[in-house]
Length: 93
Image 1 (cartoon, helix red, strand yellow):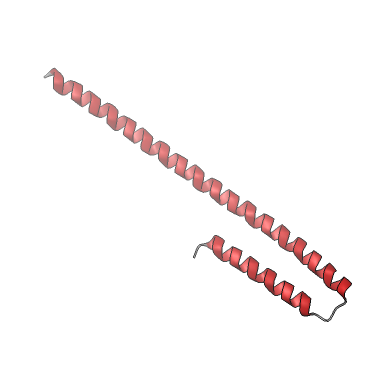
Image 2: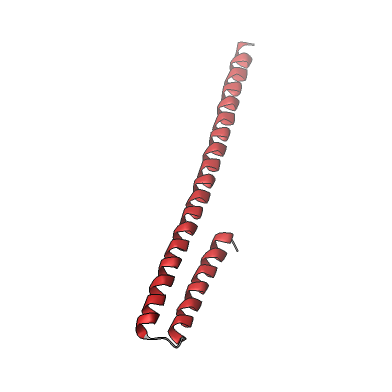
């Protein structure tokens, strides 16, 4: 299981636990709504942090993939040039 899926599952589980706890607590409706609003804001902030981390990780993966692709492109170009040169040399003999 990837870290991202685990973190998302933990976040959803925590949210469900908080909602269940708030709804079963012996508080007035006004207090319960305030608690839900506060917890929703906290979870929203945490989700934003996690989204930024995921975006940074995705950017890193894309950068590495582009770098690898450029490396292979360079190798292929050099191999093609070498093959052309060898072919020309062979045809001159």
